[in-house]
Each structure stands twice: as C-alpha cells, then as structure tokens.
Image (cartoon, rainbow, N blue to C red):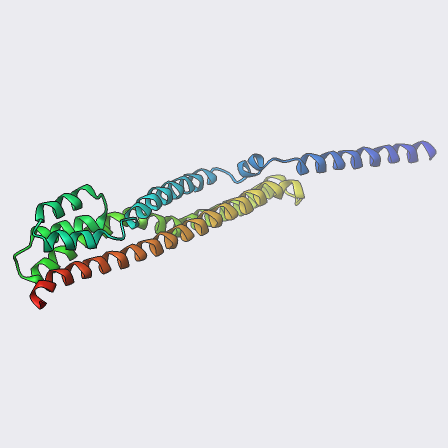
Length: 233
C-alpha cells in the first residue's frame, strides 16, 4: 500500500510538472506564433492591411500636397490680369503644381468669353482634380467592410475545426478545442482590427479632401470676382 501511494504521488508530480511546463510554453508564445494560429485566413487579412496602409499614405501625401499653395497666389493673378500680363499669369499657374493653379489656368484661357462659361470650365477642372484626389479611396471603404467578414469566416472555420476534432477523438478536452479556439479568436480579432483601421483611414482622408474642396471653391470664387472688378469700376 505504501508503494502504491508513492507511485501515485510520483505520477501526480509528473502531471503537475508537465502542466507547469505547458503553461510556461504558452506564456512564452510570441506574437508571430499567435498570429500563425489564426490559420490561412490571416493571409488575405494581412494583404488587406498592407493595401489599406499603402493607399492611406499614397493619398495622404497627395492630398496634403494639393492643400498647400501660396496665400498670395490669387493676389498675384489679380495684379497680372489688371496689368494685362496674361502670359505672366499663365506662367505662374503653369509653374505652380497645384489643383487651384490648374483651375485658374483654365479660367485664364477662357478670358474674353462670358463669365458663366469661364465659371463652368473652372468647375469642370475642379471636379477632375477632386476625382484624382479621391482615387482608390473606394478601395479603403471596401476593405473596411470585407476585412471583418474574413474574420467571421475564420470564426466559422474555427468552430468547424473544434467539432471535427471532437468527432475524431470521441471526447471533449481543452487540447482538442484549443486549436479551433485560437483560429476563431485570432482571425476575428485580426479582421476587426484591419476593418477599423481602414474605416478610420477612409474618413480621415475624406475630411482632408473636404478641406481642399473648400479652399478650391474659395479661390475659384475669388478669381471670378476679380474678373468682374473692371466691369464694376
């Protein structure tokens, strides 16, 4: 009886030791190992994340560049127009690589025609400029919508994996369901994270574009006003 008791104590000690070692291994799991447990669906989610980041920085710098122009740009155009230096005004617009300069340049080319026609031509150029700034923004919106869906698919795949493992082993244990739970939770978290980031990027860029639109409208209005100044005098 004493020998049996000693053997049982040894077995209990071995089981406890293995449990502690397993806990240590799990606690030392790296972030990369955790990501890999998300299954193959992590690959498309990661690709969506890369695309979202690329589009954001590409559009961010393009929009920020478009928003920068000299505060006295319209004043210089006014001076050139009043002095009859149309070529100088055209050269200034051509040398200024900004949407507002291209809009004003189109208006200068229409000088001598009715104000309404000049205004319409400026508006058309402005629409094209905004369209260029919004390029690929719709992709960000799509990523914000489909990334969580990929995570949801991962959740379903993880649950299927859990029940499949249980059906093979014909019993329920933490070891059997752990793999499926990892895939379920990691893929869901990754999909939601990418979707949220893409959603923030999308609206952030749209706010920046709205500010650029206001500046373009203001400068276009100032240009039309300066064309009407000689008539008023």
